[in-house]
Length: 126
Image 1 (spheres, rainbow, N blue to C red):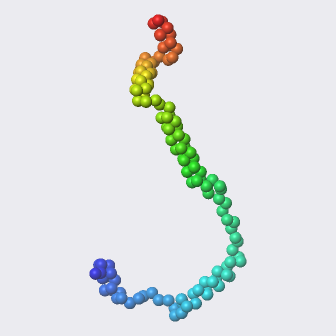
Image 2 (image 1 turned 90 degrees about the vertical axis):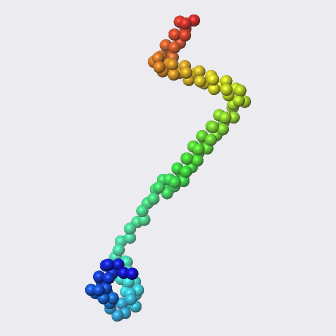
Image 3 (image 1 turned 90 degrees about the horizontal axis):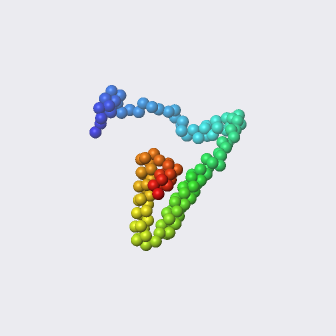
């Protein structure tokens, strides 16, 4: 049941309690502590309460409100963007248009042409 340390302590020192307080020490402790506190209270200068800025007090609410507004804005934007589309056939056509536009952008980036160069190239070709 005992560990090595407990066995060693019991073997050398026994089970007797070695820590003692004077008789009646805890009987009058409460009144002595209160008397000491009352005696020291008038001499202790009162420190002002720390000021807490409004930002520190309400920052969690402000951050939560800002996040809610942003999420609501993104959700509304996604909903509005999705509401303007027609049936799936026109979605297919628009995706082809987007794909050709992105191919044109990729070609312009690869050839290091800006829009003026592209316009002059198209005008010369006609």
